[in-house]
Length: 284
Image (cartoon, helix red, strand yellow):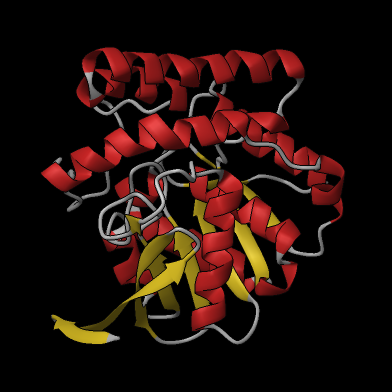
């Protein structure tokens, strides 16, 4: 494990062999372990501002999903699935923690967390599931409608590239890049060459994983893991990721926790979002 300083903080970085791939991860802070599974094309550093506010109270673990940034896929014949991503998280938690941890899953990260809650419930104490990209939570008609939305984004990507696919993707997830609220001092992240490659992989591969995903909802209903459905305050009511959060809440018989910002509140409102994470985890 390599150690390096960044300001006053020390970050530990390492890679972990997983089935058909190698997973890059980072650990920082002190206190109870909190694993963050990022949204979309996000890698271990995507929620950097949020992590800086959480590492005061938690040992924060972040990672690059397989196929993104520094996590390499060695066996290209294994298409990624949400279940595969969850198995990667299982192996990561086995390597870094001796007991159940808290997990913040954003978007696809929330979908990954729900799989983990069924396959390895002993590893999770609390899962905050923020707007899971899980059409299987919806009724048949809405599920088909929103799976079609995801497929359309992929069609645009294949025809015209990732930049062209950003607009339909943002509409599908209820994100208004030009009009979303942002906390003072938060800077919009530039799209680097690495992030552009992540967008391409996310749309081409992980959108398929989301469309084809499913879980036994009855087993999810009975899971012993504390699952906290969450949604952004400004996420439009008609988009499927918000609907998935509310369907999950109905399934579990709990209320939806409202977080600052919209689908990407972890990026646009890191201070307020961190406060909500602390408050939710303090109740566990």
